[in-house]
Image (tube, rainbow, N blue to C red):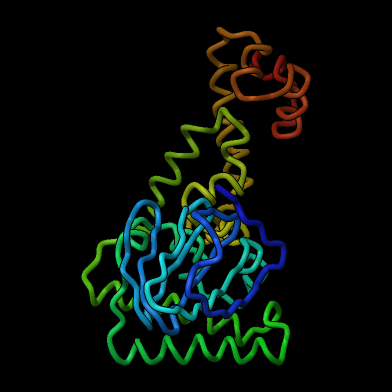
Length: 277
């Protein structure tokens, strides 16, 4: 099964076929697929979704799909990489920063259901896709704020349709208690509390996570991690039951010297002196 790659952040592709040119495949990027005309069956992750003109599908990396065309079909593909939204954080509203379009596109319900766009959403969707295609003929769409907002509006139309169809998506609400619990459970593994890792775990844009955390918890994420780690290390020292070397290993430091330098920077004293207090 082929896996397709794309290196440009945004690519538009419009074409018509009587037989789809690709076998079942996956890719490393995201796709919004609009059916301009035609009909057939979309094979998506072992689901058979009957399509017609006006339908829309969203494909995320590692989804497997292909089209079984019954009636000559004209497709419009809007293909983008992770970097497309990440590079435009200043243009994005808070809702799409916390619940990123990429995480939204991975929702299982979008792979099992053909969305039924009613009016006026159906006409707005058609016009929006055509606007994007028109811009692509004249300008570099990868850097266009107008095209970016047009693409965001498609997600708004999808959300409105999901609401009208009474479909239940996975919860994308951020639970601050869950964030704190995740940090406390993984504080012993530095890689798991890196901003990029924890942001991905909670489906929040990593470029936005630090600002969100500080606004919510009243302290920077970096300082929160340092304070928690230092407090736990202090408790280990107070118990005076474990050698420094073992404590260093427990908290993911490379060696005893690494822990000593870290603690000295935070507390202005060596662990050996602290243990004597």
